[in-house]
Length: 191
Image (cartoon, rainbow, N blue to C red):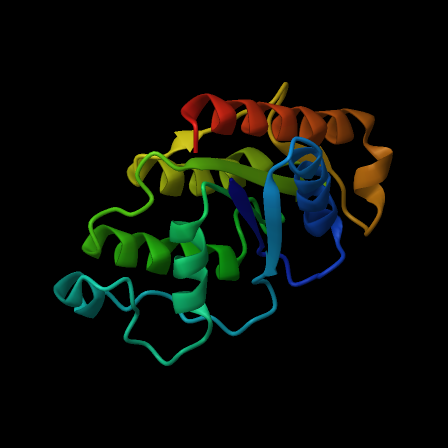
């Protein structure tokens, strides 16, 4: 079993990355292979709705290669997917939006290769807005017929500056429980 996590924050060691690593550590302790992929900070173009991927049905985007084809392959070859995005103005980052739009469109054209994979979203926020960020990511999972994993609270943390996540006891506990719940679901599904 393998879980791939996508850090859609431009900060490679910010709170989003720390939250993702916390979940991955729990999954690794449960014997599940993990990989963390840095997406944030890359110049990713949004979907242009050209329809080439739908026509070709090959899980390939026709836009100039910016890493998105590799991200799509990573998702379809994994058993579980975690997408993390900080909350920017009560929503996800532009990199996260490009990721879910383009991979979602490619996946739909290629026969829904994400069907029944396990997904989870995480988001730190300064004070509020993370619910909308999580909801946007979860919509990607649900429209691709994935199994969405929850925790003991929303998969978020009140964290603004790097390291604030570790001071949020409930946020830390939530990430730990998310990792446990994701491992349990993956094992129950036999992925």
